Image 1 (cartoon, rainbow, N blue to C red):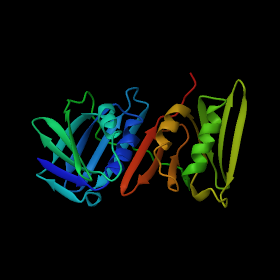
Image 2 (spheres, rainbow, N blue to C red; image 1 turned 180 degrees about the vertical axis):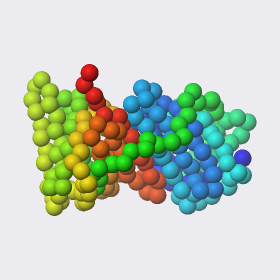
Image 3 (cartoon, one colour; image 1 turned 90 degrees about the vertical axis):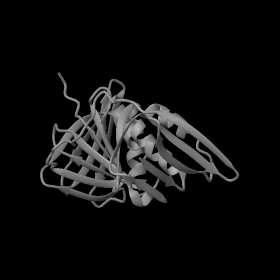
Image 4 (cartoon, helix red, strand yellow; image 1 turned 45 degrees about the vertical axis):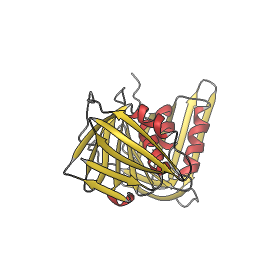
Length: 247
């Protein structure tokens, strides 16, 4: 049993959008520490790990631990109807998730059927990364959009001097170099040079929910899954993406 209230329903909507950009279903674990989820996308190329602490909620009553399996797409559709100045109360009732939007002089209540998720994920990939880059989010979004004009894949290369993003396709090539001391890069920590190629569509879906002005953290190891993370308020979003390997 649980009853949660968040004063700004749009905050919860934005968090769910960051999950729904990759996965279509998942299990939310609700405990005294907050709400968390780990899920793979249907192709098993990427993974999302989400945690929103209990302090983000104005009311957080939970009896023990609760596991709530939901269709993320359907949840996102309901949350897309969030209006200005609405709070949200979330409860479990009769094997359904109750969501009540409370606005000035109005209330709307939805109930979403709980589901048995086909495949659950318990652990994140265990990778000892060689390079970590923290950069401003908006420039990275722009670079990814630039690369999508000429290719379906993008290469990241990190050294102690530079972080290089490149793409190559039939119509042309792109190379974007960012010096360690540049305004777009906040920190670069490199134990060993790292380089890998990734699917652009997945990366676009990962970064699009990052709030304007926030940093994005990227961790790399050559030919290993990358880790990409950022915060939405107090919530932490972590993505993993497998590298593209030419056959």
